[in-house]
Length: 128
Image (tube, rainbow, N blue to C red; front, side, top):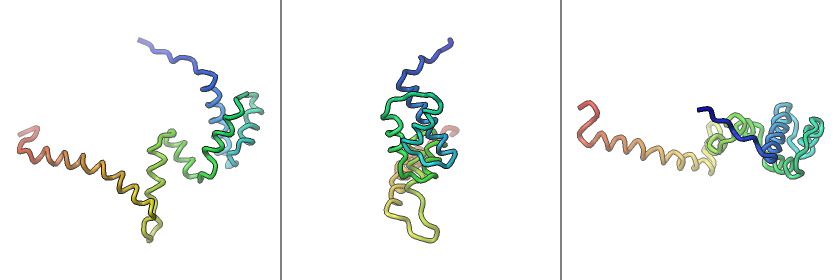
């Protein structure tokens, strides 16, 4: 069985074009502004709704280069962006107030290991 993807909608094509323009600007170490995005799109003869360049520029405005790298390399997933943001503490210093977020994020992992331990405490195992 061969599954074929449906053709992208006009809005999806526009969003992709604007995302590529932002990637080009980022790769060339240029500011990601609505004007710069629009310049690239115009040069490529790509027409998009006026809100797309403004939206992408606003999303990425003020973000450090490293965070934009995380978004790109993480495939845009929220976890890839959120994990580095809260866990970085200065060397030799105390963790910032936002440093409590990794502790909260680590908490859900703890019950998993506890549940594995509790299974071991039941007096039987897979190969007993």
